[in-house]
Length: 60
Image (cartoon, rainbow, N blue to C red; front, top):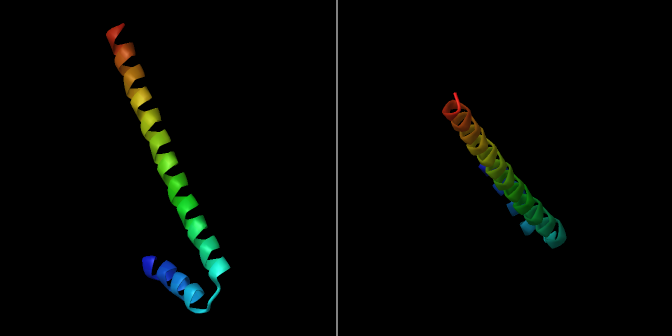
């Protein structure tokens, strides 16, 4: 998969399509940021679930 994206990136840059290359780079950065934000949200949700479970066990 990495080779596939590397090939696309090299082809765009080699053909002199700078605007398309920059669009690709920005899109790739946005996808990485979205992935990180999703991972943080899942982690926060998991931690809250653990805290709620611990609280409910303390009151029993």
